[in-house]
Length: 319
Image (cartoon, rainbow, N blue to C red; front, side, top):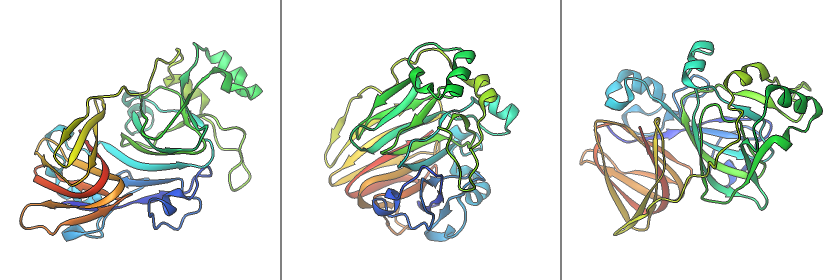
């Protein structure tokens, strides 16, 4: 086994921009480029391996052949999808189902997700939950009148903010926000409201209000910004767990010189580089993997001791 540098697949949703190309070096021809799915085995967007003995194979194919790369905590299924999102315009107000509902009605996982804000233009905000308790009747009336916003909780955001969005919580990414998203491996989204926008064919995008009501938490939203956690400082780096839930754990690591860690057989790990550049070494047999801002590396469970050198910020994700 060896570290696998991944090649993403892009999505050209109408609200996207071009910052993933200009700032995160995505060589994807789509216009706009709204999302890049960096680490994915979902059939709606498969990432490929771009180095080593598995070069040009999909990650899904590699993991099907080597389920041991997932680790014992994954129970034979890769559970995550890691992506970058560039919102030039507001996303639709939407909600995702939980696992039970999604598996019964969509034959997919549900979707709990976390957002790590990479950049936010002045005045940018997110919608997360409701400002007060609502009912189906209130929501339906507001959607008809076009004033749903009076019920929503808008949260101003800044670079470095972290949010956990559980399944069932209504949400939307606002214009001017660039973020990394770590989520369950799912592509089930129920649109609640889309500002009466038209798609490229001149049609209004489909809403899924009835299904949304089935899964939506209509109570006022508690604070969702993840609290500051203890930052641990080591020679050459600092480490901070920024989000932990039943599906994944995400650690933010600032490397000024070097950082060493181990990948045990309990779980794979994913490295998402959000700034700078560096190299990763693992064992004597493998050539160092060079990576930079915007790159994503999959580390198979049981890989052992790894060593990263460079000046960079990264997110390290595992089950």
